[in-house]
Length: 201
Image: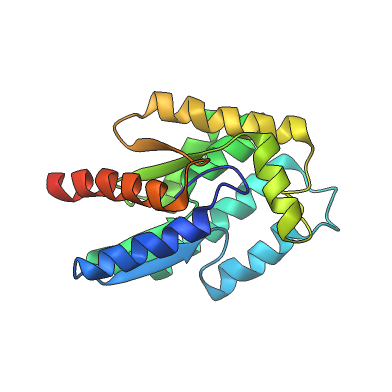
């Protein structure tokens, strides 16, 4: 599940999990960065608003390190045992935030992350599409912003547009849903897109 900050990923992940359980899947939820003891420690460093001096490449490598640990400890074993995995962010977030918005380059991010992910690319990625302005408005109403959320409007516009660019590049995997729709409508659209993936498998 991907999308700009404030797109409603958490709500939709929970609704998708309940539906998959009804389909008799054993479901594993993960979040990025995080999901393991080591990855959660890395998360604390990445999102700490005190570390304003963090270099973009350092940021990229930290996200990738957290992902490598998550794949090794959680995602890989879950998939190999036949479970369904729903991840709150994955590789596409790093491509967009660090590759596009930070300017490190899409191909560079893919190359570095190939070592962290191996063969565990998502079968389907749901992109909750939302404008940067609306996403930031929603986030500011919720709580204090972390280091990434506190970036300026220009940065978040690059993120929102970056996701659309990735969706155009990989339409067979990345399925876009309008995040301004009612949550029940969004959930129905997500189910339809996941069903197609299940039928193909």
